Image (tube, rainbow, N blue to C red; front, side, top):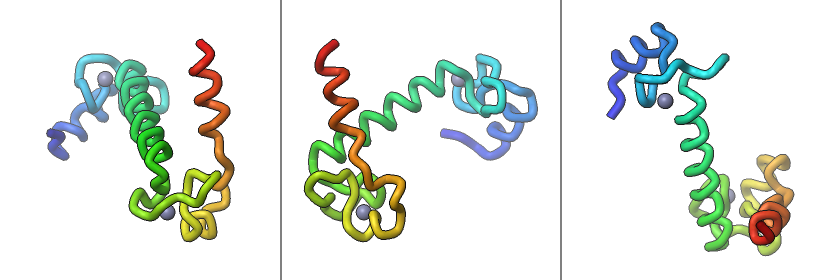
Length: 95
Ligand SMILES: [Zn+2]
Ligand SMILES: [Zn+2]
């Protein structure tokens, strides 16, 4: 649980706002350790969505076949329209 006050204090002190023990990474508000953990869980959530054929952007529509997003989100945000997942997945499956 993050309170606003605690968050502000940690940011002001230059420590990670998440764990409060490590110094924040340059230009970030959390430490390298927490950033890595955060990235890993974001990736995991993303994978789950893609695996289940759910749009990775709005997370409630069905994704179009061959894409990670639904039609509506793709129309709104063209950047996310290309599927990176297959390449990623391939790389990891090999190692
Ligand atoms: Zn941290
Ligand atoms: Zn969507």
